[in-house]
Image 1 (cartoon, one colour):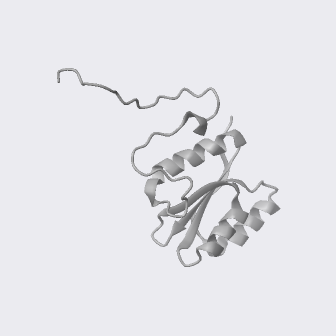
Image 2 (cartoon, rainbow, N blue to C red; image 1 turned 135 degrees about the vertical axis):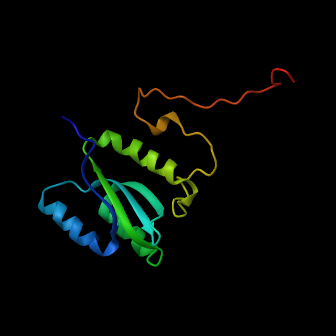
Length: 134
């Protein structure tokens, strides 16, 4: 039976970053996947994917006073990383103040390219012209 994650950690203090990285390495587990950097209130401020611990360390150095916690999700099948990152970004919305390239403010729709090829994608359409009955 397939599972979505091989390992994950949620809202761990940044002081635990090196220990978690070392433990995963000792277990022979990969350290790539989706990660979240949180502020002191636990609000997601940065979401990304890739080399989890290197990226989190870089974000912590850049925003040492603001970022206090981290979450990570090591995805068993790498093809799902992008979709998981997309869902987390959409859920966090405009709170991602350090994700200026990725955040979408408001209710703008996503893009079919955010998901795996062949995924059925319904998109909100806007109607042009007059409404019926007006």
